[in-house]
Image (cartoon, rainbow, N blue to C red; front, side, top):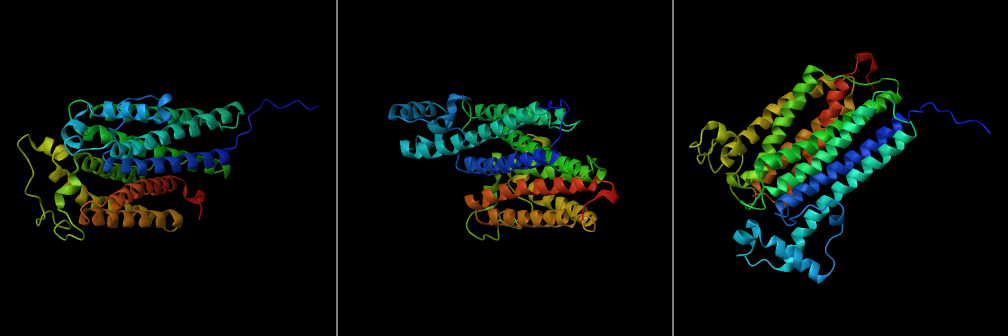
Length: 354
């Protein structure tokens, strides 16, 4: 019988594929999170039960108990209660919040269990252990931030804090970017290339996109998409806002700083025009990649082009839910594309793939 070697046997390509699967789950969760927000479902579950909460109500008594808990919060007493919400309508919004949390639990298991397996089998390449543990901690933090966000809407307001919503979304997209970057680094390890470094321009592109995503999250939390107008293909909603280039409804009474992050008119205005700054930066990024990493260049162009068109269509439609969800989904795909481009830019020229 041969004695099994105690030395490690790194499998970077297997780890890379695993991380891409986890990244796909995160993209799914971002899309479902958009549905949860747009259907006002996020406050339908008033408790956080990490284990038992995975099982939805089954009996009529259990449903009545959940509905009774929901009936105590402002969203019900001030909006849905006076509108005559039925148990059937409550079950609909409950489903989306429960499904959103279920995907979060699934992501946790899909990351933690394979990580433990790769670790025990000594298949993680040197230098990646701390990074993978950090990704696991980011996932745990995301769950905590999600509950912190929900709590902001259970007592004093009919919706969650737009700052906490932005934190929740930005943390998810940061985790997505870190997953993709690490997966690409591991793929590089498998090819003998190794880790990429972050360049100044790559960091600029990611930072410009991060600011746009933050503004988009504020728009979502403030319901600022509705201030442009309503109705399908309303030209008053874009490129203008209610018939004007700069909206007339901005409230400056609490100061410019407050208006920039809390006034729905101004936040929406900044979000729609900062987008063109991001487009300019991403065009430069894609051109720098065109000769040596054409696939990444095409992905960046395709993602930001689609995202711009979806953003315009969303406001012109009066915020049709399916368009708004697609806008959030493609936003996640844009994060992947820009991360790919920034990572490729950080490789030495003679090591780039063609």
